[in-house]
Image 1: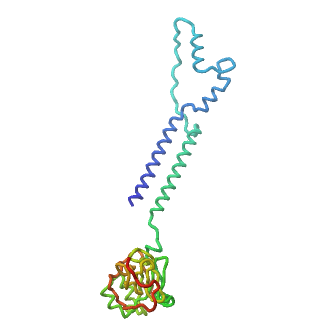
Image 2: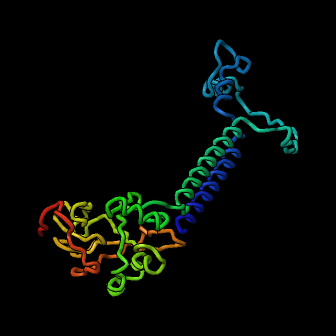
Length: 290
């Protein structure tokens, strides 16, 4: 909000400066313009004689030479005529005023557009994708999708892996995980589904590599340095300092909602609530530290 107020104040001050400049230029427009003076010099009716009009210095010198010697007679001038302000309606708008006001108007229009664009950029917008709450879908359909994809579903819009959490491991999970994580893990037992759900961040906690799943071992295995995690993201080997980070999960009316703006740090080394062992050969090989 302070940035929005600063933009509004800047636009208002710019408008005041432009209007003041326009009035000053209009008030100074009573003198002869450059075009009028150029026209007077080229008008033969204003010439003092000869083939060409005299310049100001030449005219002054000629008048001084033609002036008779002696005293100068003082001639009384006619009484001053009282000034009558011209009728604004009859006077109309001069060309100079028209251009001045046109320039000021265009600048004001441009500043208004710029200010509107700044406000539109700063105004809060409805966000979607990574960093927002994503409605993944009906939990029954999500669990079926996990089963049909060999236990792993990747959601690129949320940079996350979705896996099932077995109902039989819920009691161990209650002692190891936070409420934000348990909302998805316990959905199976509390809401009558075949299993709970886990939403895991795709990055390895070691050095941030994207961790793929291994179909043969049914684990996550990092290709960069060999860290290994079971199907629910708990560390089983390699140099990773903890299990895979995960997102806060909620089940609202049977619909899975993942808050990708809330990343929960993965469980510490030694956490193994499901007891899942590798179900086949590893895709990366033996985990090694670096």
